[in-house]
Image (tube, rainbow, N blue to C red; front, side, top):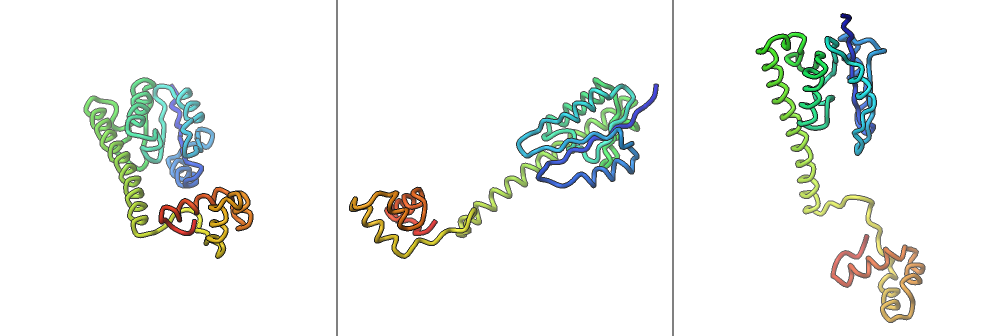
Length: 206
């Protein structure tokens, strides 16, 4: 039976380009015609090329990926895809960044299978934990910056000098909020928000 070698590349459209993964697969080598690639948005994990690839894989074939997190977006998904490919399809997997995860060398006996599966579980767990830690550090950094007074988003617009005069006219029901905003050259929502901030003792700018 002929053994086919396939490669899979996954990148986010807001992330890195695919060059590093492609160079690694070509160096294996994996033929260009056998490389499948998905480019995903941050909110969409639909992987049509990966599904095409797994439908094409058969027992004895080899799937090559650069790193273990190409198989899935979290710990459970990586383990499930590993099980499907190695146990159900009975194809081999080679993870270029982790030589221990090469079922061509370890998957032919019970001990080898156990070692590969154990290493996979540890690496998948570590990869997910690190992603969660990165998100937590980002959130903590943002919270700390806000406590220091750092503002995020668009630069704050200074209030016009005549804001208080116009606001008094609005409070006295001499003009509408729409007219007040028009006189100040700002949106009605901004005028009302600034007025609320002044009433509550908040900032005088937005």
